[in-house]
Image (cartoon, rainbow, N blue to C red; front, side, top):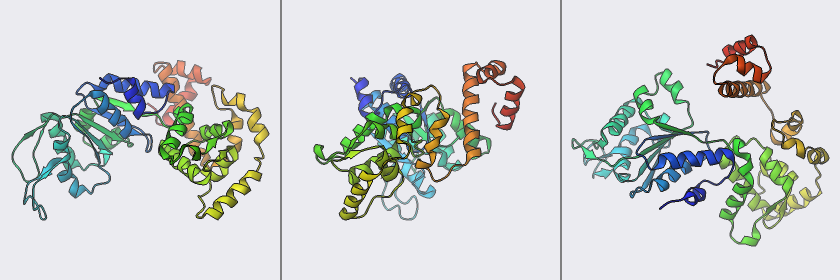
Length: 360
């Protein structure tokens, strides 16, 4: 028997978005339906696939394949296996990932990178629940459960002809969107504790993070998501072993600066950063109530360049408009006039923005 704790051990977090994610995993895990996991790079799509496999209680193995990491000419043999003599160098038969995952779960990561020719064979395997090895004519039946993942927009790839529509609809039975780290920033304290504990050699050597350091981590936009957070915390473990990390260390030494290369440099860096006082520390302290506001306060952008070297203002503001307009349309059930009221703009203005931003 599996329980919520099985998922909690794999996917760390208790934010609203993560609880919704776990709920969807529990709902679909024990079915035979193909699941399409969508999300940005570094959000943990493979962890979602692992959780699906664990909760499903399937007896076979969890077999992951990164389709983008395997050359196209080798991927077919990797997935389906091959018979002896199927091609030059095939001096013995090989079992493919499909067979290895029978009675278990096959996880195809970055499925958007598969060639059109291989997409046709993948579709056939899904529909028939059987495969043929490269160079073989025998049908091999499978107890198949497939989970696919991508960070790409497959609908756009279907529209431009680089991804088969029939395969897209076949794998898009139950789509699960993995939230970005910025969308689940409340989980950062839990993730920080979990990641540091996984890195530790001795418990008393772990760095400790002050409240304002955790707040700085939560305010970062994390374009690399959980993978980026893990890198930053590994850097903290190296630089500030058994020491206290404050907000200034997060901004200046963990997010922006490279790790030193020698013990002497580590000590020098630590001594130097002890003397540094953030120029906006008082403003930061006084704005703690603002941080909890429903919407980001404009003053939050005052320290933007503490974290980033530059910003493409037009692109950023455009993306903010798209997100807010789409959210308002979802809230209003697609009724433009109601969405305009939510956004406090004229209906005609909203329509013009939707056309400009290509929002359906």
